[in-house]
Amino acid sequence: MKRRTLLGMMTSSAAVAAAPGLAGGETSAWRGAWQDWTNAFLSSEGRVVDALQDNASHSEGQAWGMLLTVAFNDADAFARMFAWTEQHLAVRQDPLLAWRWRPGEGVRDFNNASDGDLFYAWALLRASREFAEPRYAERAGKVARAIDMILVREMPGGGLLLRPAAERFSAPGAETVNPSYYMPLALHALAAAFDLPRLAQVADDGEALLARIARRGLVPDWVVVTADGLSAPDRLPAGYGYDALRVPLYLVWSGRFAHPAVSRVRSLLTSPGPGGVPVRAEVESGRTTERSDAQGYAAVAALVTCAGRPLPDDTLPAFSADQAYYPATLHLLAVTAASEAAAHCLG
Image 1 (cartoon, rainbow, N blue to C red):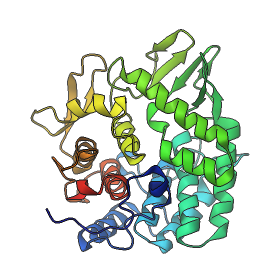
Image 2: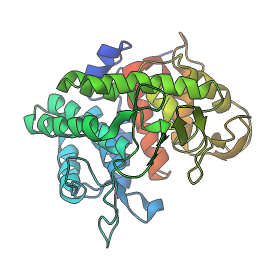
Image 3: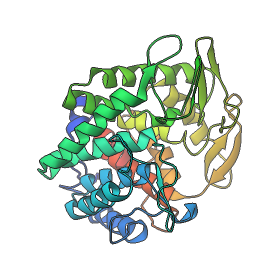
């Protein structure tokens, strides 16, 4: 089978961490996909727009978009996204970002979202190297140190965990965790770049927590951690859903093809049924409760089922901008992950 020639087709964690992405040898098909994504979801001033969320922009979306600009070697788009983010989301008293901006109202909730901060710092670190821009590294270091100081906390029962935000989500003896906020590759990259060993530990402890959760069933969107064990939160989604979709994507991107959370979800993603890929399911039974035919979710499923196998059973589908912002963005993140960690999955 003919393979697309891409930069960064590496399998070791060290190589993946340094990989510049798709820029050097991507096919016209993927270059066109990036252009289609920017036309559909990126405003001229550098704002990533989520039409289904009242045209809001989120720290997570800005950070993902900036990471993709590095993969596709689009320094101009990165600069515009960075400028918009710094002006509109970097409004807290610390280096972290406010999690959401809405047209006509700006930022009203100044809490952060830890995955947005993590990917923002990682995108800045990668951009500083790819685009030879020291100020990006300086900002990445400030955000990474804030993550270390503000968002890393002792886990009930031992170890470290990544809080989902600086405020809320904590109670005496209990921490509410979003498993999809763990991205081991990003945490290890920031730990190495800025001498922050606790970020490396929280990555390792996070992987152990995900494995512990996966022993019980599918990894959910949210879980409560106490010294006595794991439980479902009262007021947050406790099933496998749109957040949890990202858990296997990030683990595969980090080279953890055989992680229990990846193995657990493979059977779900390959389960037959009309309506596309399972996007919601019961955690314990694994019963699918919702499917979607968006190609971005199919791309994540293809990557997860293909990764770690010597020959691909499935390859990532072609990109289409005729899908919502979220699956479209996951689609290109899956392409980037495949180019760095599982090149055979690109076909």
